[in-house]
Length: 301
Ligand SMILES: [Zn+2]
Image: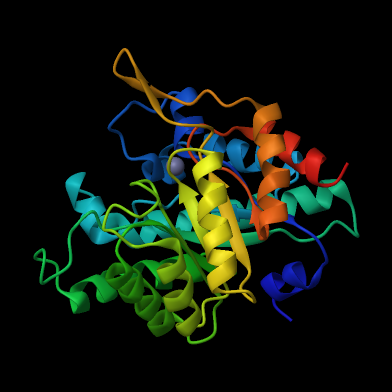
């Protein structure tokens, strides 16, 4: 039985991790720099974030590889290093989990390495220029590297366009026919994604594609996430649902984006998300290990 299946067979809510990007910025990453370059340049700092989330109670953690498709890497002139940066990202998390289990002793449940895949940033044809086949090819390449580095599942996140999700799911399945695929979309535009996808439409479609779990991430904080999860639950009663909200509504202060929701508020929201049907609960932008620890305590006091 793979680690994902073992994890999901346990009863109750599974805690996922929180933000990576905003944590690395606190550790000195400059705005505009590529976070996944730190997998090679500052692996200790990336591992420290993973460690803090493990200690906070997260049992499914995302690799630091959000921008790891060749379209995003090309913006930084790093498209030639995609395999290395993705594979190293998965290895760092795998190693950190193994060290954590060694320290914590036998009986500690193995956490799951979720190979993180984010959007291309391009718009698919016919609306845009990106061809489905090129997108699927880029996602397949990223998935191959993540699996080579030790990913247990592939986690496709912050998606707005179902056609791009289809390319990512298909690309992943080319890399591995049986690796579990998790998809979360961002419902940040009047309850829909930027491309107009409703939560209930996402739930129905993703169900047809037989993803292992589905839900929402990022967006305008836990209240809007709660609405999206309720709609997904109604449309897909049997699905394993995921909620990874930001720490509140993003606010622009002196040119920087800040997130103000406290750990206590996020802990309250975690209970509401659970009651609405979310089975996997974590955080996105602005959440820290303190937020995740408070959420874990609220769920399992
Ligand atoms: Zn986010």
